Amino acid sequence: MNDEKTLQADDGGLTRTIGGFVAEDYRTAEVFERHGIDFCCGGNVPLDTACRQKGIDPAVILSEIESAKREPMERSQNFAAWELPFLADYIVAVHHAYIKDTAGQIVLYALKVAEVHGSRHPEVKEIASIFEKVAADLATHLREEEEIFFPAVKRADAARKAGERPERQDIDAIRGDLARLRREHEEVGDAIHAIRRLAGDFAIPDDACNTYRVTYQKLKEFEDDLHKHVHLENNIIFLKVERELIPSAA
Image (tube, rainbow, N blue to C red; front, top):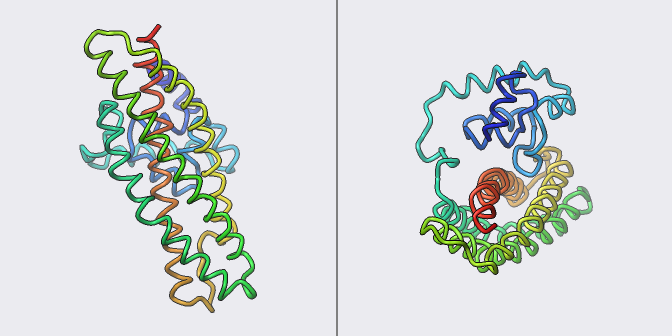
C-alpha cells in the first residue's frame, strides 16, 4: 500500500489500482460504479488503464474521487482498518447470509420468468440458466470459505498476535485457497456481468409482469451486494492475509 501511495503522489494516481482506491476509502466505490468501472473482480487494473478501456478522461474520475472523499465517512465503512477476524465474521454475517437468503429465491423467480416470457424474450432463459449455476457455485464457494479458509486465517492471526509461528497446515490451506478463491470470484463476476448485458442493464420491457420486474430488481441488488462482497475479500482481506500472515510463517 505504501508503494502504491508513492506512485499516486508521483503520477496523480493514474497507476494506482481501482481496488486500491476503494480499499483505502469505500466512498470512492460510488464513483467507479457510476462509470461502470469494476472495482471488485477487476480491481487490480490501474486507473489509467480502466479509463482508457471505458473512453473516460482520468481527470474526471480523479475529480469525482476528491469530491466523494469530502463527504462524511461512516466509521462502518473504514473496512481497511478492521482486523482479519472481524472482517471474516462481517463477510459471513452480512454477505454470505445475504446470498444464502436470496439466491434460491432469485433462481425460482428467474425460472418462472423464463417459462412465461421466454418465447418473447429469449434472453431471460439464458439469464435463468446462468444465475442457477452462479447460485450453485457460490454455495460451494461460501462453504469453503466458512469451513476452511476463514478458520485457518483466524488461527494463523491468533498465533501471529501471540508471537508464535502459525501452523504450517493453516498457511498451506490459506495459500492454496487464495488463488482458487480469486479465480472463482472472477468467474462469478463474469457471469453476473453477462446477466447485466443480457438484461440490457436491467431495463424493464413494456410487457413485463410483476415477477419480471421483481426478478430484475433482485438481480440488480444481488450484483450490488456481490461487488461489495468481492471487494472486501479481493482488495482487503486477501491482501491483509498476504501481508500479515504468510510472511509470519516464513
